[in-house]
Image (cartoon, rainbow, N blue to C red; front, side, top):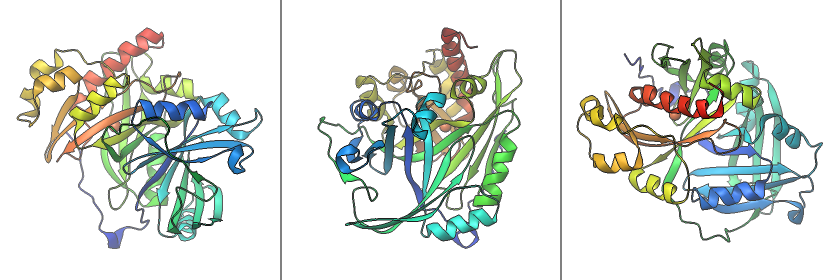
Length: 374
Ligand code: FE2
């Protein structure tokens, strides 16, 4: 049974208003090449840059955008920089999940009063295009939430960045916005971090999945989904559960050396087009066997899309009380089996594809087996 509790708080009861995801920043080994990958494979456009040519002596960052999704790819220019150390330990990975707020100093103070750990005191950044106020708090692992107030800024991204355009002929693939970001935490850490989001950021517990919901013959995990007041921010938090073999969450924690962002789900309103384009661009996805499509309609009922086309693209389908959803998962997007993407199209459904968990986790296990980490 899905334990979806419909707790969309109204604005008046939202104790920590967040307007949306501002950006997601990766620390990577080679920002220039990563930026090319996101342009060529995922159809993001380059919009801003900072580096030695713009006066940034230690760090290079490329900012990419597709509709409402903004990614920042940052690398260090020297081996003793904290970003270089972060990459040496974790590999390429998500460092910052930035939240767009109306008042960064007030939000920061509220979070601190409720027990957050500071990552950056409120700071005003300024250039010819105006002012942005930022502050930061720590979340799981070495991940940070930067709080961004940009009521008074019309530059390309943030002060310190210069506007840039892609030289590569980018073709957008229809990615629209960040639907949810999933964190993997250590055994026993899930409830702690759920409580953090509830107590500090005023999030509500949306769904609980126990190890009976998410298990295969070999491995299991547990997950709870928290969401902010307006529902724009959804953070599922996973922890490993006892199974016969090593779970995908343990594999992640081993390779990432701690808790961190596992996957970013991005929404499209035409998943057939989006996935077709991504496949043509060389993005590789987890494979679900054809037998999945023999019975899927018995489970999900009538859908608008052509099943043969969904099967050709290997897109998964699930239904809840409010509608259905279409989803697909990429393989990890860096050498270590850590961060990957989900492409999702919601047609009424507000859940996360529980009906696909088994097929999905068996697909991940086949990959783990190839890596020798199951
Ligand atoms: Fe997801």
